[in-house]
Length: 132
Image 1 (cartoon, rainbow, N blue to C red):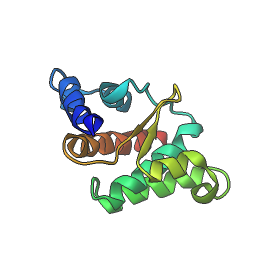
Image 2 (cartoon, one colour):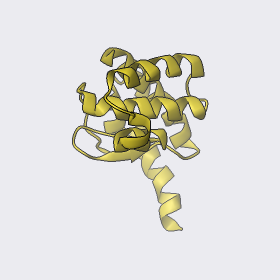
Image 3 (cartoon, one colour):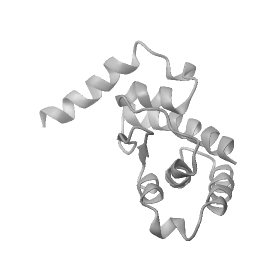
Image 4 (tube, rainbow, N blue to C red):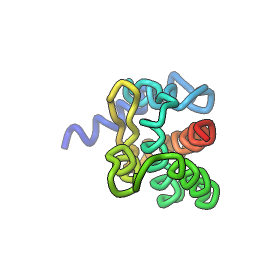
């Protein structure tokens, strides 16, 4: 119970000194939220980015058409049926962002986290476009 009260306070303490709007990359945003490293541009992260785009569109953080177009193009570049077999995609579709260092950040939630998730989703869309 105490942890539920501390998490929003901790997020606020981390976010107040830094403006997320000025974050230069997805790694910067994620790093401000929990020490997550930057995402690589290799195909191993493409599946996670595709899954995150699905999550962001499904939860109305991104325009569904724009996110789906990028997601579908990314999936087209990946081998096999990524949506059912790839753990990176499955995690992303649940709102779990995975960094190059293996750390993960769960974007689901409400309050400050919900507002930050919108900004992270915008960065994920930009990252996805850069992977095409």
